[in-house]
Length: 164
Image (cartoon, rainbow, N blue to C red; front, side, top):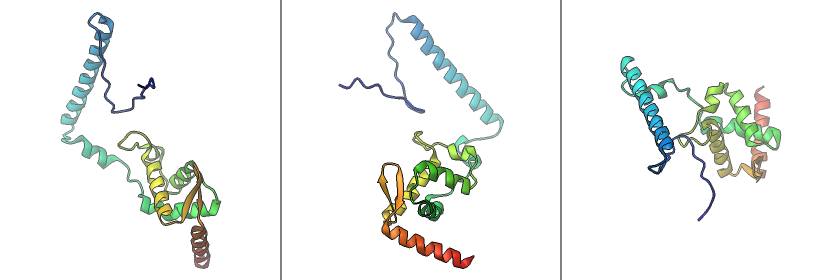
């Protein structure tokens, strides 16, 4: 049996077992339950007062629309090619700036609650490029173009210069 302690995150369920003689802990646990129920009551009241029947629809309606992995794939490819080596962090920041994402859009968390959705989208675009044999990781956290990728990048760069 491992002695490693599990880290709990948002949405995780925590079970607390209390001995009968631990009155302070039992009182504390009861207060936590009361607080949770009070918050739920206030939210439900606010929802009914404002005429919302489904909070999830309201959240989705007000959530900013993020570009998809397909939308950003070419820009990610060109960024990696223009810089020879790119870290994921550099890619997240460059593309977020290019697509003019505000701070909130950059920090929306995935459903799992483990990372920003934007980072996940960028990594899916990288995965698509990797599946097309255009990009590879030369070591953990360093993205580069493959030989095929360098050839395609050169052609796209030349075509871009001709248009200008």
